[in-house]
Image 1 (cartoon, helix red, strand yellow):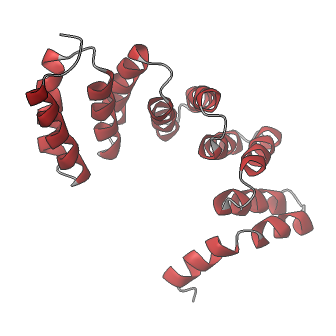
Image 2 (cartoon, helix red, strand yellow; image 1 turned 180 degrees about the horizontal axis):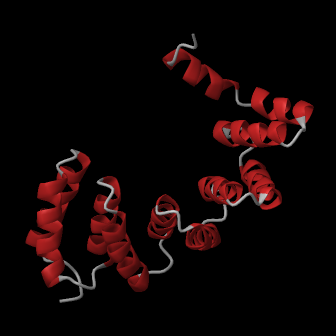
Length: 185
């Protein structure tokens, strides 16, 4: 079956979502797999399974379901972003960048994908490209504290102390957040 869920199956799916939100991943997985037998072409069930496996760090399995969901609907931002995230965690950086760029093409105000692309390029030591994506993220949201902090760190590391400190100064809430939770001895 490909189409719409019956009302009973929709209730079952809602139960699975609630279990997943409550971090009862084993029971949620059982429900999703049961539903997937009937609705193998259902985007949402495939996506939820992929997201579940991402949460329990079974990334190769997560990708299987996320890529299936992507085949069904390649215009879903959340699915595309999750694929990028899985590839990034698996250190398949070129594929991570590719899917983050797809996510940005779906949602052009996507700050997080720009920040993740910057992190990917930084891991490849492609500093110029990393800088460009930090700048794009901050053009979308110049108050993004993680973006300001990480870009400031990069600039300081690259010898641009004054400019880097200005970005870090823009991340004062980020600094306060961490200083309230951790003591530095």
